[in-house]
Amino acid sequence: MLVPEKMAKYSVEKIDDACMRMMYDRQGYNMASSKVRTSSFSRKVQVAPTSSVPGLKYGPNGTIFLSSGIPDLDKILGGGFHLGSLVMVMEDTEAPHHMLLLRTFMSQGLVHNQPVLYASPSKNPRAFLGTLPATLVSKDDKSLKSDAEQKDLRIAWQYKKYLGENKPPIEERDGKVEYCNDFDLRKPIEKHLIAGNRVECVGLLDCSSLAGIRDSCTKFLSQLPRFDGNITSAGRIAIQSFCAPQCEYYDKEWDMLSFIRSIKSMVRSSNAVAFITFPASLVSPSVSKRLQHLADTLLAVKAIPDEDKELATLLTGYQDMLGLLSIHKVARFNTQVPVILDATTYSMKLQKRRSLVLECLNQAPVDGSSGSSYGTSGGCSSSSNTGTLDF
Image (tube, rainbow, N blue to C red; front, side, top):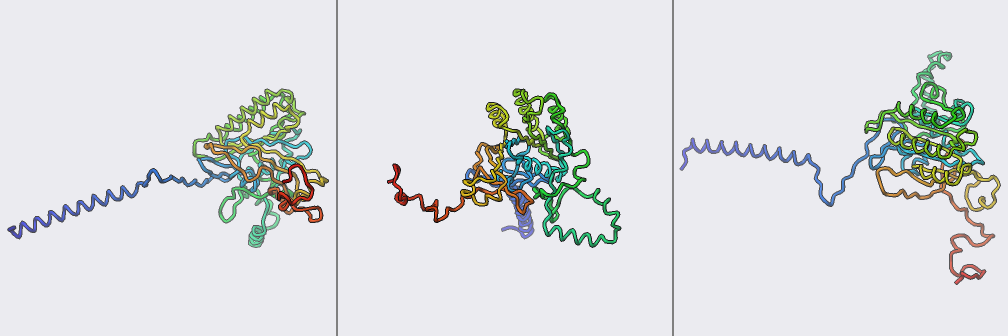
């Protein structure tokens, strides 16, 4: 038998050992719980981080999107234009519908306080900035502005014009910066957004060769930080009618192709998006095909005749259409999965004669007096006129 003193000493030692084991087990449990349990049957799901830079949005596979300025186009492309991509738009020589895409692209960059480089074959490219659209103000925003104006009635009216100079250029709603804004095509952009060194204009007519334009783009991209994961700002390059006949380099086809290749390589390694429009019908077919192949995202606009009775009977809302937008190619970064779109051709319309919207093409129903409808004419024996393919 054990002496009571030995029994007490023995029990104290056992209690100490048990406490130490519990402490070690708890530490091991905490270390095990901090590790993520993975198995061969579980799939790692990475949540896309939110961007603190206005006008940028993270996508899947580590991609970053830049807004096009048209909410419907951003949804169709899966988020917008890929940062570091080359976007090319084939113009229609009969109508300047490509200017709508170019204006919204530039205005969205100015609203988000992003530097913009604009190149145009016009004599005064700076004058084009006055045609950029302003952000569309909703009824709720108007009521908020009216309440703020009533609170500021104590300020003399002659001093209000000086308050617009210090107005922040970034539009906010409910304390959050909007990724893509709706623009009012009837109102010009505010002057304080154009003022400053955020917009650089280059005249294509002033450049005898493409070396000067390339140097301007290189200088513009050098001011932006390289893509290293920590993005602080993003830039936009907008070139209008690159292959215009009035330019001196119009007949130098290989120089134009080498310029597009160099712009694509420079943009790919920087935080910028290049948006270039070109008249595909005014260049040779071989050059046009090569330009389309170099584009990461390829769009095309086409005008609709005012009096086309065949299209009017086939499409619904034909009278409200401005033109057609076709998507021939969508950029694919960090993935080999092809992008499958619901449709490749969309109608361009003006909502309330202000903002640009894109809609899928819908076939108009056939009148009953003109024959059977499209849904009922697919039967094998529904047609009264027998033909060679009638069963």
